[in-house]
Amino acid sequence: MSMDLAAKFGPSSRRLRLETLVKLRWVAVAGQLLTILVVALWFDFTLPLMTCLGLIAALAAANSLLSIAFPPTYRLEPAAAFAVLALDLFQMGALLFITGGLNNPFAPLICIPVIISFASQPSRHSIALFITALAFITLLAFTPYPLPWFEGRTLEVHPLLQLGMWSSIVSMTAFAAFYAYRVSQEASLLADALTATELILQREKHLHQLDGLAAAAAHELGTPLATISVVAKEMERDLGHDDRYREDVQLLRSQSERCRDILRRLTSLATEGEAHMRELPLSSMIEEVISPHREFGVKVELIELSDRALEPVGTRNPAILYGLGNLLENAVDYARSKVTVSVEHTSAEVTVMIEDDGAGFSPGVLQRIGEPYVTSRQNETRAGGLGLGLFIAKTLLERSGASLRFENRSPEGSGARVVVTWPREYMELDTSL
Image (cartoon, helix red, strand yellow):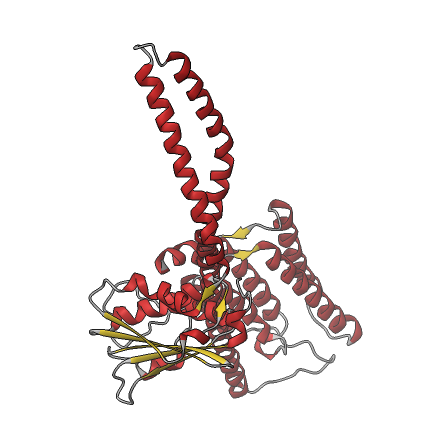
């Protein structure tokens, strides 16, 4: 399932929406234009005004062209996004080159296209853009154009200070780009995992709604089937003495009666199961969670630490059933021979503890367990173990009001333990999601 999600959500989540980029570029156009006009007209500094205005106009024209050619919701392919961001980088680099290069106080802004790329594009395109930016930053150190300054005065910057400015801009670009990439990756993984959680929960709800659909189908089919049965009886009375039709008529009546019996059983099962679906004692819920995992060569032992007569009775919650089932499945997968499920309820809390006799959690994993795509044990020998199932289980259980604690049964790491605790009122109210 994890690999399917990566294929389904991953590529699309790394595409940059054109409208976002267009808006950012209009902000850049406005900022550049305001800065140039203030420097040229307010401070009356000497600078190549027409060339600067031409570069700003070129960026505005390119932005307008993109707005006209594509709808706002269009998402750029990685290659197209790289080309657009490279154009922004070239325009900014050219503007800085003719206005003092690294001496320009706005020189650090050249890192913005790189940061945008690392936040939204595949790493290979982002690295290529970073290398391009590094070349531009280096070129800015050798610009022959002076920094616009007061007339008759030239601002000289020592080469060592220029080297320091080059180093600071490069290091800032690298750090900010790396930070943006990591934050974006984590956000994408979390968004994909939460989407998977919603899909799982919807599937569980759908499965629990099938009994209602069966009852509805039985009710709707009852009337036409009763008509068929009446017609079959009339045909048997009129044609039953005719050898040509006797067997066919009797077969038609017997099959219609059989269908009525089937629908009657479906209706009675749905009626009997309605209360069961509405009210589910804690012991029945735990047994429903455990029963699918008894036939895998690992002993699953249930220990009830409290009086069953005082157990809470709540409503069927697909989130709790799936979450506990996933935790138990994980324990069975890693256990050597035995998994123990302990259930305890008091007047204040309900606790379910799942323990196995496997290798336990590694110290590094314990600190990050429950995050999407983090494996849960020391030795992952099965293909595709990306930890998404555990994240989904944890998320669903926490949504139901539970708190979870992951630990090892002993300091040596022999055997894992998961403790799930709810306030008792959460298990007695209608907490279905």
